[in-house]
Length: 393
Image (cartoon, rainbow, N blue to C red):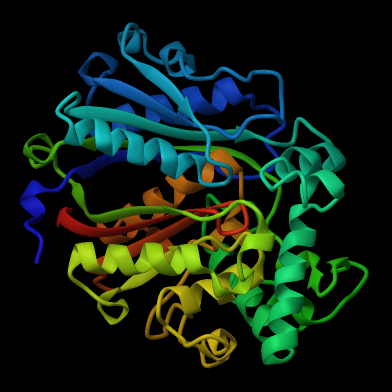
């Protein structure tokens, strides 16, 4: 059992609504959550030792956002500030860098921000920007987009284990039902199983077998965390400890991997469980990277909820519903909450901290003790798994 009094802590946070935010810029989103996180924690800019910004970039012309938090609080001036990019796991990359900074003794309090302004580009531009996070020589560079990449994964899974269309629709319907209760979510509508299961005018095929309802949204948004060294974090009224943090990167080319084995996520979960001294059955809930419904299904297998080929049954049996044995994506996940890529990893940790401290509102689960976060960059290339536990709420 880890001594939580020696673990770094989340002591404050902020989160914008996700969606098409036409009145917002990358700068305004960053400033909003900077002010919000500092206020939530009860500190000011000069109390922060370093700033870490997760941002994929490529969607608008502000490609150097590291110092933008200073626009919100001049007390951050002259603090070290760095932007981190690791595809759709850029937010977790920034967070883990902050935790490393604290562990080294170079910081006692760090501000972590994840932000993205995606809707400044049209759909074709967004697809091209995201495709650059694939292996360009064999994937994005020859016209394959991420819906196409995950459609290939889904079709490979179907070919190996049988048609899983009912399971994928169940995942989508579950996450939309959850997202309908999340005031921060992009899509706050319970679409139901029947809509998600069938192709229709409003639910067209994007890349067979994936439909619109199988794909996360293009969104704008930002989230922020204040993290602290253990001896500092325990002075604050709420503190959520990092019981485990593990990053695992895999080969970039899909041609070098069995992509539906999800070996990188599987290894990251195994290492996180070992570090935390727990197993999957000890978790109260999990937020996982459902950029596409097939990714959530594969995550069930990677985290040990199901054997290979059995992830669909986990969904169909209701194991991951809010009233199931292990609720997954109570926030609505990327599917309904939205996926402003640089913000996603930070957002997932905010949502988990809110659950663990009893501040999740209508989304609140009864008495959660341990929460897992799985944030992924690319086609299971960059994989981050955190295990969080409440110290003070």
